[in-house]
Length: 391
Image 1 (cartoon, rainbow, N blue to C red):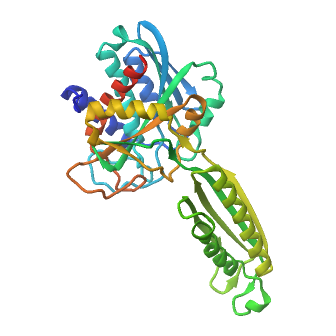
Image 2: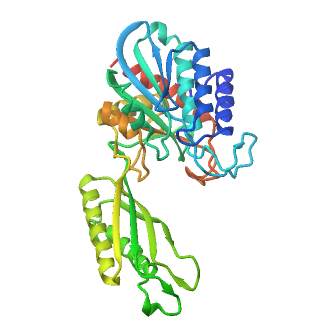
Image 3: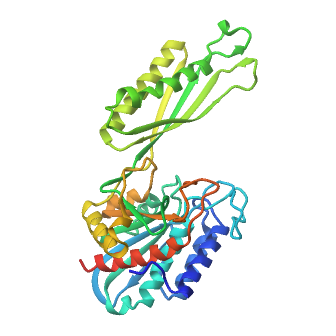
């Protein structure tokens, strides 16, 4: 397989990706993004349904002969980050940026649709490919919201595919996890209530800041001292809000964090341990201590048989040395909801300039891509989808 599309095709992809990049929109606000996708689908004469879970779109590409149905997902939302790159296509919306590559994902998906038509697959192939343009991946559970509409309930999808750009790998390489690809998440909320007063008279108070400081340290012992050394988990406290002035001991402190786990049993054990530590902190400092856990995205599990197929197909197309077996990521991914329904696989697409070393990761204000990944994404997924549908 060639890694480069004809110049005219490549240039269209680059122009399209840069247009999406310049006008990022947050979760469930992807109105202009959605409208542009609909305009392109209309121009390509592709039937679609818009307005699913707000801004989501489902488009269908059918071959003349009947066959299996596959699905391909692209997420659309951006992040509340101010872009630091000095490029001609820099975000024109202050405080918003496509820092996770969703602009590339949309472009690749639309490119696959064009490739299917221009390669003649719609005349010579069989089956149907459902293209899902999904809102709100960045914390808004857009995949779950689309599924909850019931619109996909009767879809006989054999498997669902997705790609995600990854700057740790150079453009031209891909990565795939053998089974567990992304962690399950929980949001952790802890409220400590003591007795406020003057900072000069701490003996008259019950200080929730000191209790919270001890609590943060204790929570960091869970992974190192309660889990077997070969198990993985992350406990991070990302927010600690308390106090209004340097000489006032406040009444309350509020802590919020995230838990990332790769095993349901480990998840349950850690939540139990956090509850115990929070309760113990309340007793030790004579304050009230309340703990709440809110479940986030579930584990993303790749289908092992699909992984075998992709490794063989990608190895043939790219060369085996460009196909990397990945360890699970502690990042979350709501593509997991589609995989729970249909079974599927996520493939990471290297997007770093091959001549440079890795420097900026996803969600960085400096994140950018080598735009050759657009060609590779279209060609590789086009090959994989059309081959797998014949399996």
